[in-house]
Length: 328
Image (cartoon, rainbow, N blue to C red; front, side):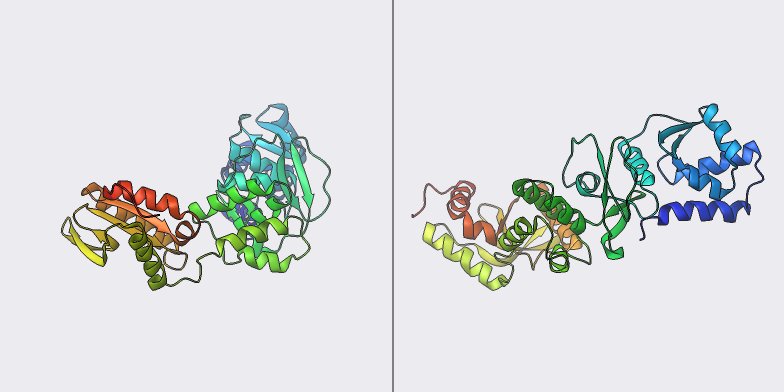
C-alpha cells in the first residue's frame, strides 16, 4: 500500500461524503474529526485545505486551541496528549507525501526492537526541513518495501531490518531478526531479496552473517532430522521413543514426532521447512497446549540446537526422561 494511501483515503472519503465543504463551523469540525479518526487524532494543514476548509477557518480553530500544533502544519484535533502511534503518525505527516516510518522507529512499531531514542526516524523521498524530534532520512523506498501498520505508513519488516543494520550493532540487529522470526513477521519480498537489491548498503556484512547462521539445517529433510536425533539418543544411552506415534487426547488423535509413552513426553523436531508458515506456527502451539493440559510434556528441538548445543539438549532430555546420566 502506498505511504500516503491512508491519508488520501481519509480525504477522498470526506469529499465523497459531503461533495465539498461550505465553510460552516459544524461541517468544518466534522471534516477535521473524520480526517483525524484515520490518523490517530492528527490532521495536516494541507489535508484540511484540500478537504475544503479555508485558511481563516483553520487559523480560527488554532486560536481556539481546538487544533494543537505538533509540527509545522501538523495538528492534533481536540487534544494535546499523543499516544506512541500518534507521535509516529505526526512525524510521518511532517515528512509530507511519500514519507514512511523507518529505522529504529519502524522496528519499535513492528515490535521487533524497542527504542529509547528521543527522535523519530522517517524516510522521505526528498529533502525536508528539520523538525524537532524527527530524524529525516532522504531515500527512495520502492513500493514493495512499504506497507501500513495500525494506520501508519511504515517500511516492511525486511526493509526495516535492512535499514536497522546501518545504525545498530550486529548483536542488536541479530536480536531484532530473531524477534521478527518469533513473531512470524515476513513479507513477499524477503531480506535475502533486499540484500541482492542493495549490494552496497552499509551493514550488509552483519545481515549476511545472520542469514548464513539461519541457513544451518534449512535444507535438512524430516528423515535426516529424525536420524540425527535418534543417533544422539543412542550415543547418550537414552531410551528410544516411538517415532511418528499418535496418542489419543480429549477424543482426538494427535501425532507426535517422538513419543515416550511411559514418561508421557513428546519431542517435536522443528526444521525451517516443516514449521515455516504463520498458520503452521499457530497450529503447533494450539496442539502443544492441548497436550500439556492433558498431562503431556512437550519439548521442541531444532536442527540448530542438535548441531550447536548437543550437550545441553542431552542434559535436558536426561532430566525430562528421568535418566541418571548419559554416555559422553
